[in-house]
Each structure stands twice: as C-alpha cells, then as structure tokens.
Figure 1 (tube, rainbow, N blue to C red):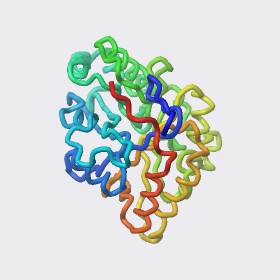
Figure 2: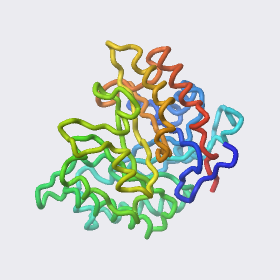
Figure 3: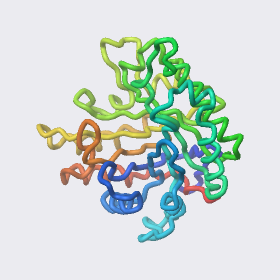
Figure 4: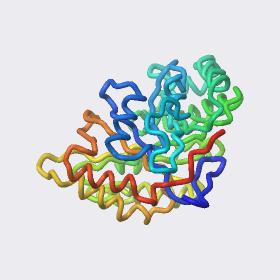
Length: 323
C-alpha cells in the first residue's frame, strides 16, 4: 500500500499483515510447505508461523532463508512483494520444567545459548511468543509451579534474559487461547506478564461447531460465562495500547455443511475492517489439526473464497522491512 509505514514494533500504519502456518502436521519441511501453500492461496505470506520447543535453536538456516526470500521461486509476485517475510516463532522453552522453575533460572544457560545464536545470525525483527495458549496448562494450586502468576513470571524472565543477551529484535507476543471457559476463570488476569515485556497481544480462535461468523471467532462468548465479553472486546478494554494478532485461526471441516468454509471466508472478508486493532491474521493450515481439517481448499468454493480473502487490498500492509 502506498504511504503505509511500519513501526519499530512491526505495527503497520494501514492494512493488515497476512500470515500462514503452512501445512502443519504434514511432515513437509517449512520451505516446501510454504511454497505449496503460497501456490494454493495465490499470494505470498507476510508472516510465517513456526514452532520450536526445548533446546532447539532458531531461526534455523532454512527459516532465515524464508525470512530473507532466499531461493524464492516466484520473485516479486503481485508486482510488489519483496519475497521477504516476517517470522512468528512460537517457543515452548521446556516440556518438563515448571514455569516457576524457569522463572527461577533453571533454563538460563539454554536461554543464553539461544540469545547468542540469534545475535550472531539474525538481526532482522521477528515476532516471538513464549509458551502460547497457557490457559489449559494452569494449575492454580499453591506450590504447583504452574499458576497464572508463575506463567507471567516465566514469560518476563525469558524475555528479559534474552534482552540482556543482546536480543533486541524480538517483538514479543502474548498469545492466549481466547476461549470463554478459561478467560472467565478468576486467575485469568494473572497470566499477563506486563506491558514492558509484551508488544502485541494475540488469540488463537477456531471456528468449531459454535462459531458461525468472524465476530463469533474473535469475540467468542458463552451464556454460562456471562462475564466474559469476547477476546477482542477484552483486549481493547484492558490493553488498549497493544495491537491484536490473530496468531492462529482456522475453520474446521463440516461434512454436513460442505459450503461452510466458503461462507465463513467470505464473511471474514466482509467484516474484518470492523476490527481495526487486529493488525495481523495468521491462518493455521493443516489436514490434521487437533480437532479437524483446517485446510482452506478442501472444496472449490472454499479455495475461491479464501483466495479472494487473501488477495483483498486490506490485507496488503506496508512492505516487510529490511534490516
């Protein structure tokens, strides 16, 4: 978009970043999965969502190539895309240490090793979320090491330790599930790590049997949790200075309603401008998501509607910045 700019925190002044988690759970390496999904949806991604855990170092050489457009087969598709992409890296520092243990320094050597790796090889800005969707991992019993407050302390410790290690290019994302049953819990507010370590706030909503519209996706509510207003409304009320990212969203296959994906994607295109603080939409494309098939092209109508959504001018933010 002519005249659009990007802030230091990667917030576009107009338009919305369009992203993808490509062909998840297929076993394909990231570059090949991305090539295939970009061909399928008919445009390049601005954001590529990638997942790491434990002692893995990131970005890998392959992921650095994706970010920089190396080996790009299609050049500047659509006449304006540089081939560069923003990485959204989703890191769970440990699967066996509690949040309290990490906050107390149990993984400091691992964090420092990662910081040195990033500092040496990847100066570009990237999105980083630390242990996304923590709600269903919370154990609020005292001493569990997995309370909401333990999570907040862990997130803070990891981010501050990375910064002390020289990582000043990670744009941090606090990623919630955004589901009403967890969000209405009395401990929910305790998860938030603090404005100084959170740059964006994100949700991971999916269109299951209860969700029929884009508003239902980003503002999920349930009658039995009457105090929960929906994630977008909550974020705008409680965290008004933070841009909102839909860091994972997907539409599940409904065998009894073969036109559902088509109608849903059309609805997203019609309504997305009503949510101006959503600055990034990142689709989760997988034949084997935990609760179903979220591929966008399982029907001809779904593919057509998704392609029209992906190519909408509103989903053309400023060019991905070059560092």
